[in-house]
Structures are given as structure tokens and as C-alpha cells.
Length: 323
Image (cartoon, rainbow, N blue to C red):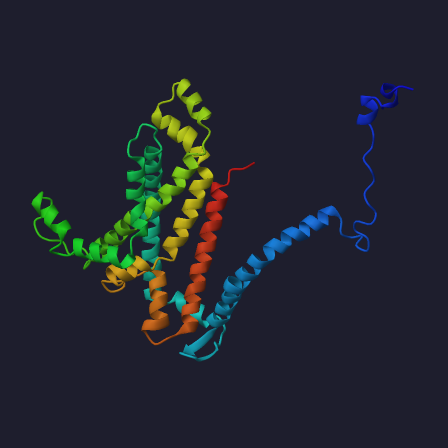
């Protein structure tokens, strides 16, 4: 017999079955098959992070909820009678209601304007015809990296009665006398909103810019070939592909605004009166500046938590268009 006839044919080799698995591979561990081994490996990697989240986040949340059911001054705390006394007190606290109104004013006005401006800026900076892209991107992103103390001092100086803003408005004839920007409720809120826009618009722009660079350009070219102008292409083609990133930035901006503290504290100190104070600023005052009432402060923090969770859930449901 020749060597050629001794070799199996190609069709015979292709139909040959693989060797059976080694029966001694998982000897003594019949339950540890391949799928379970992979599952256990995944949980082993997740376990350290899960433990850290539980210890650093969830356990303190539970402790804070227990604390919100207590009342007293300083460390002399006892469970309230009834247990929901602090939450009942919140419903009649006019100062807290004013801080909720202020916070939602910042949220409703500032967040939509900021996200629209960030989206427009990202679209402009993504243009291949734009020169000095690195300079413009850095200049717009830089405010969110500036120290809070530095930028608040600059804003307080600019909006002082003898500051740069009043001098400029008087020079061009828009006002006859200086405006007390930080001394009136409406104008002080305007300064806070302007500070938030200046500081965080570039931060959100970076997210949109990253998402724009991952968009399928063939869909944009197809829209242009069909006769769509620049605005129609942007609104009907680009924006729908950015929906997941828009939802993400909306949730982050909403959560950040509901927990707003820095601008309320550094720019206006919550004044005049309590007219610009945010919920987190009031929480800080109740906890540390006045007679410490940690139980009542914990109740305020849980109200903020519920508002953040509810609005995030609504935004996710509205923004999720999957079938």
C-alpha cells in the first residue's frame, strides 16, 4: 500500500469527532463546569469594588436614614416621637421650601441652556475646517478646572457695585446707575446661574465632542446628498445619535444642580437673606453653623436623595427610546 492511499481523505478528516474531554480535569468538582467557572471568575473581579461601594456608600446611607429618625442637639440624640417627626417638620419649614424653590430655579433655567450651548460648541469644534482646535477646546474646558475660590472672587469683584460689569454697562449706556447685583434676590440668582454656565458648559462639551467623533459619518453624508441643510442634518441625524450622551449629561447636570453648594456658598453666602440659598447649603448650615441638629440635617439629605433618584429615573425613561 502506498503512502497516498494510507492517508485518510480530506472529507474523512473533517468529519472526525474531537477527542472526549479529560475526565480527570475537574475530578472531585463535578459542579464546576466551564460556564460556572467563568461566572465565578467574573464575581471574583466584581467583589472588591462591590464591597467598597457597600462600605463607603450604602452602609452610610442606612446609617443616615436611621439618624434622620432621631432628634436632639449635638450628640444627645434620641429616636423621635413619632419617628417621622423630622420629615413632618420639613413640610412646615419655610426656609427649606425657599431653598427647594431656589434649587429648582437653577435647575430649570441653567441645565437646558448649558446643555444646548455645550452641544452647539461641540458641533462647531468638531468641524474639520476649524483651525486651532486644541486652543479653543482648552479655552472652553478650562473654567471647570479653575479653583472655586479664585473664580468666586473674580465674579464677586466683577459684579460689585463699582465692578467691571456696572462700569461697562454704564459706558455703553444700558444703565444710568450701578446695579447691586449681589444685593438683590433676582440679580443674585442671575449671577449664580451665570457662574454655573461659565464653569460647567465646557465640561459637558467634552462629552458631546467625544460622542460626535464616534458618529457614523456615512449617515451625515447621505442626508446632505438628499438635500438636507446644515441645521436639518444636525437636528435629524446628529442629535438622535447623541441621545445616550445627552441623557447621561442631563442626569449628571441635574444631580449636580440638586446638590449645588459651591456657588451658593462662595458667591452669595445664600443671601440676601435666604433668597439664593440651595438645599445643600441649608443642610450645611443646619449641621454645622447653627445649633447642630444632625437628625434634621439627615432628613434634608434624604429628601435631596429622593429628588435626585426620581428625576434621574424620569430622565432615563424619557431618554430611553429602545424597542
